[in-house]
Image 1 (cartoon, helix red, strand yellow):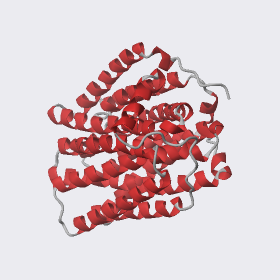
Image 2 (tube, helix red, strand yellow):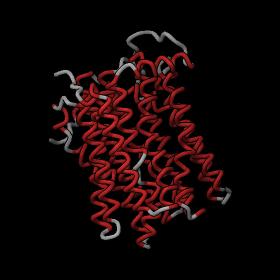
Image 3 (cartoon, helix red, strand yellow):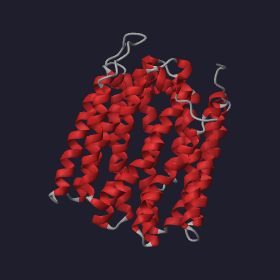
Image 4 (cartoon, one colour):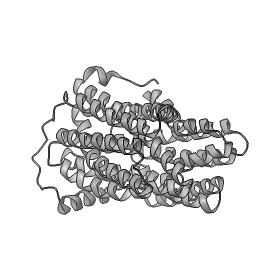
Length: 406
């Protein structure tokens, strides 16, 4: 039942990439806590905090699609290296601006948009490089390991971010983010760029992007993974409301556990994920995780009035179900997409699993501003449940999908 760490021992190239990205994701999560905190300090508005998601979404989409097309042609390792170096410079520059009190709300939004663009551009190269470093039969284990890495960073990163905010202010958080990118680049030097199965046929551009979309749209199993995750996240991703929820209790220390709870539940899912290696009904498990997420968000909202810790438990349970869904989504993607399309499909995948939370933050931020935190969460999660049922009715091949026996 316990997570298998064997691939980290057997495949040095994957190990260096894994460790470097663990550090990088830690730094990103420190900044992830700092940016909403800074906006809320400056505006005292959940709507403005939620707007961060919308501001980040457009560059993420545009540069994610373009980055996917580029990753199918150019050297994937170099793409990651250049983008992370650029992100380190931006984080350091922003830390200096904060230190000297030279920031404004539009400035925070601009930095968020720029970092989202670079992150979107380099993520497909990262996602398409990873499966090339291990044999195909190890991919389910790789999905669990990458899930564990992300959730571990999502727990520890906000905790470190909270400490840095308390001890040194927001600028310290962005200095830490810059340092994490530099460390990640050092580990990346030990990773080779594996040879492709075939020479690229198209230069990066609109034609290549359209071809990637056409490939995805013709495959209901892939389409189902995108739609199910987006529906579950778009209407009930709660993180934009965390500063306001902490304010309900009048204690700033309540904020850190809220940011870490989803990842804590996801960490449990990945730590005890060995059972997932033998499951073949991957589509059904993606849907199961999405339904579990929505139901737990409703329970979280309902319990906020009565008990912070009981509500936190269901927020963690939501994270558990989300990671179950994510583990099987990533396995489907890695096992079914050919290397010739992996960058472009990784771009679409990234948009699907990142746009939902970004849109969800914006939607719930504004909805909570005109109603209440709990009403926004219940309404959003209930809408997701209804839309999931409708989507699955039309995506029978997806929820019936079975992976090939290993």
